[in-house]
Image 1 (tube, rainbow, N blue to C red):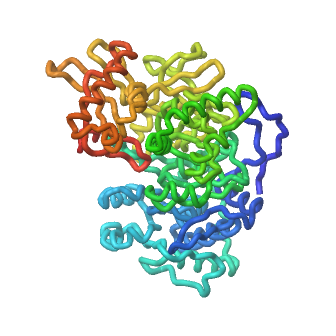
Image 2 (image 1 turned 60 degrees about the vertical axis):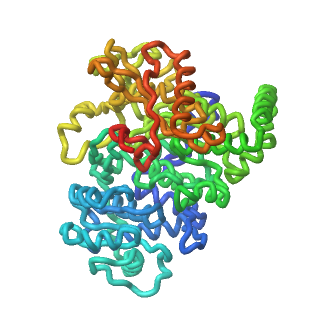
Image 3 (image 1 turned 120 degrees about the vertical axis):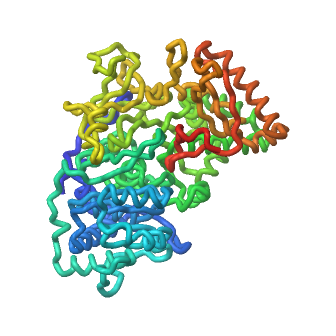
Length: 599
């Protein structure tokens, strides 16, 4: 087992954390490190048929070897293998069994339409599919349309197939089999001395993961990531985020996203933490109560939802003034070294399980005010930044040195540069120079599947990847995001407005549940107006005595006008549109901008 040498660096007051103890050589080595170091400690906790269950690091390693061996024997071990369904141990096992046998794992979004699922399976040339029970009937219908797929394995809703405890061998050559059969057959193979999977020599530069982007701008590309890409991202995550063996995480984000997979599921294999799998969005707070997490990996929508639930409770109990006074008293005490947050805000902490003290937020821009609020109540909230094409980690603020408005320091080994107006790389620009964020490193993708033209548009011959995001670096190397190049609103006078900046102001309005800022062309066909499209918080509107959409719209316009008084003239919001339904969003809870007008 390849494990790097321990470095006894002192804890730094600012900047990068000291080196940590281990580094994975590849994803197979990653699983072996977890089994060797943490053995019987629970790696995953989950519900099955209403029972609380767990899988240890050692058992998880055995399951990966079992399923990987079965794939190898079936002749699909070096082929694309798709996985789709709810988060589960079997899902994670499939991911690593496919990636570590010389094949390519194709994680699919379980909220895709049937036609899109079939299309992606064809595009990826998938040979085998592992799916949750929800998709069984669909795949039985589609089987005739997917001739390249030789088999389907169903993850049970009720049964969990622990290896070496499943009894006799099981046939796996039928077209439709239970996932249990893969485990049982793999157990028999390993017991008989079959080593094709466990001795496979991985090619670090071969595609190991194929991810189809969520398509917030109307397109979906196949991002090809190698063993080197994913392993580099895992080691970077481990290096930058202070998660330790005693930590507990609750997984709530879609597992097919590389952010959730890399940071929540794979990185803990180096750490020894326990991941608890939440069953659905409706049960997030219940899961937090039960599992009592210490760390959460979230996107801004969840952070905002937590904040709004806290403030809603505070308002209903008439405790607004009391909370403000408590925060002021706490902040004063902290300045002299006394931390009373655990006592002053114990009731709030209890609603999150009582032990939550760290949140990593990524996947979309976050309002900096959220960081200040959660810090005031005793929960450290840090931001990270990534993109699927970078597996996904680009930067993160270490917990010991958070800069609230920043998305952190570039991860070790990744070069970050700022691009000029003409797309050129700027040589040592002054701190604060704004431009496109361009990166290079071992976590940058191989390219887009079967699309050399789109690959060449973003990835040059020297390995520099154009993220499409706009930002700057400060004097200490911290990265800040100011907007998304594709979302920029170009006004008739040539000035640029980044929607994300204006949305931060709007999100402070308690009457707003969701919002998006866009450019609308005026009646003259030339003038472009900054327009806020708003989905109101109807429960809050009722509390304020606002009856009907007209009354809500009028109040929102008044509040938007107050914001306008704080903005430069060209950034002021000229139009307010109120919608009656939530925005169409991706499974990572990003608003799909090209579908904003859909009700």
